[in-house]
Image (cartoon, rainbow, N blue to C red; front, side, top):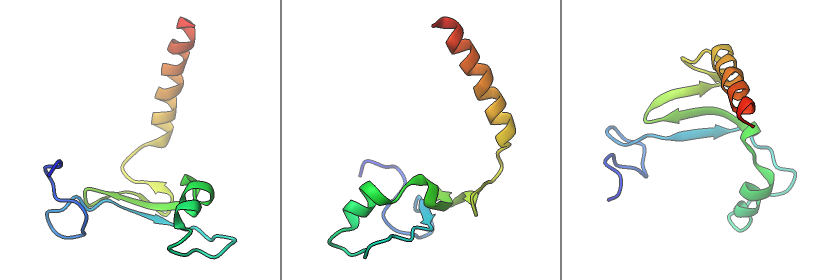
Length: 86
């Protein structure tokens, strides 16, 4: 009721946000310990694919439709300006 687009299922008209993780835990993964795995074991490094609002943003760890070098260049430019203020 708080979101204008339906969430909680993968179906036409829903938000369709999904992440795919290549997480291989060293210990058993169960419904009883999944919170511990998410908190202490899994990390963003294991994410291979991201889909938001039905659009693939990252596939096989490669950003889609974004020039990473351009983004990093802009970030460095902005960070220089921030450090000039310090």
